[in-house]
Length: 320
Ligand code: APR
Image 1 (tube, rainbow, N blue to C red):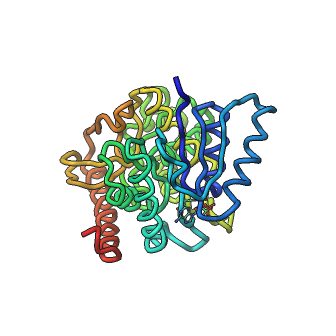
Image 2 (tube, rainbow, N blue to C red):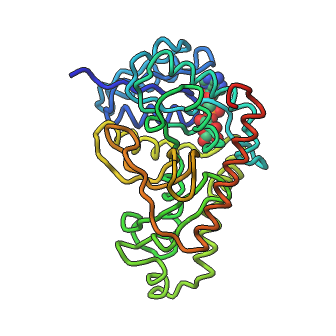
């Protein structure tokens, strides 16, 4: 059987990390695409030379030509600009929307059967626009957000409780922005609800609220520290877990920005929900019961996503 082909659109900080992770895991041969000339080729060469040391055979190539992504099984999109301190994800809308248009066309013309994972921000709007521009089925285009947001929530909870991150099952719904909804009622420490665990450990509800707040601002905290860009290790790791679920038909239940029609009171939006990822891409969106407060938080989050789509339609006629 031929090796799988993984195309990475955008060979910057996240793109390079994705290539390294995918190669180490021998997920397939990797094509790094970027508009910057020489950069994807240089990174591909550098990464290829990890192979003899780390013992992987994955072929890594760099390109500025969309023809080279032909037949890709998985495409992961990070093309665009990241945030700088003081910027919200939404501030990136105008620039990154144009980028999604060229990337969508590149995908449509070269690998229309791929499973496409979008990472570019503002995520929920960009994944929607990428789907529109590419014309791929909704189940084959998904956004990476929930895995990362849940991982941030889990990290902070594990530190607070002084337990292994492996035992924390954290759950975040909604858009990938400041209105995201960390859901404590579905967050457990190896099955023990977080509220019960907090009581056992003598951690106050206020402290849990602070952790929820830190999770919401988790990306901005890193931007503030890095000063020159945004997070890249955890976003890349999160997207790789989604690609593995697809390639291995794992049918994992993964929080991600999936197209929601009719569930959670949402009609025709990309929103962070638990979804089953397998060989058919997004095979199902799982609708869970939410408290009234969680429902209204989710509504705030989806309203914010909807506003961004209106802005996108104002910027590009073809999206109307
Ligand atoms: N086509 C292809 N690549 C592009 C295009 C385009 N039209 N426009 C920009 N790029 C490339 C840049 O040349 C750059 O190499 O996208 C790459 C982005 O890399 P970085 O600037 O290092 O950004 P990164 O940290 O990888 O984040 C990328 O993911 O998390 C989001 O907010 C983040 O939107 C940002 C994206």
